[in-house]
Length: 153
Picture (cartoon, rainbow, N blue to C red):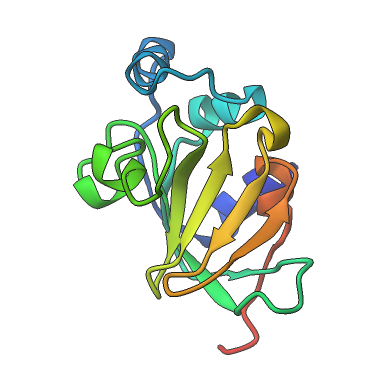
């Protein structure tokens, strides 16, 4: 069982419907990017959804301890978790052409982001709502491998 399969089985409380290949291609066209292959496959197999706040681990000891609230997806019935909205993309200065794609959030308003820029393509980062950036993993599988039962409850 992959770390993504495990995370969805263990902590997903509501999953988003799976998108079609056409919907993913339309998102890529609108964003004018080609998504990393592993993330594209994640969308086809899992898409996104709401989680029961598993703790997100970071190799950086300065990263705040937070729980995963949601992963954004395509065709969400709640606009707050729709992937690739102009409002989420505009949160970052100089994000045209797209270099940083918000792909999830914590309950504290922090973001989980995916690097689209060629020099760090596919890496997943934690962007603190009121502060810094912290690397989480080299790809989406690694991100999900860094989730665990929260120590706070």
